[in-house]
Length: 237
Image (tube, rainbow, N blue to C red; front, side, top):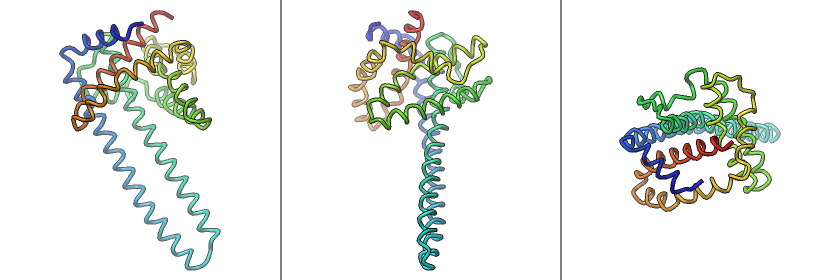
């Protein structure tokens, strides 16, 4: 599987579709920004309430309550952060599948429909469960140091492409079926995908130097190339 061929095919698919891809990137960034701002508002609000309650208990010399309140607040912040990662993950996976449709010549022209793809057509439950499970599994492996987590993230990289193909075929999807199939498919191919990701570093630096605006076009290029990677891989399995 040649990287040059994958990238060439991706650029061919994006011909006359760069504006579509850039708009989708912009919408995804905007959603991530709005959601993160909402979470920050909740965090600052809850921090104010926490501070008031803690100060009140300190004055009454109740250290046990202060400790339990602090632990509860820390847990709340963690769950809030995890929740935001799941929400943004749903939008991100919907966009990812939008590029798979582009590769399959079944592109949905309406950008909003692509952004909300994971919430449409009966996909929501299976997509949410798999976003949740891949996040948990990767996080648990990361506890063994960073490298196992990275390796597992590449094992799970094909999960949502597989999930979409199963959805289109009308197949019943088991809770971890797409994840398992992704692990099997990526045996012997994780390093190939890793090197493919590394090949975009130069473009990433240029996109960042261009005040980040270049990422609007770089993200579609990367996503389309990865969709091509999946199609080639699936054809050989």
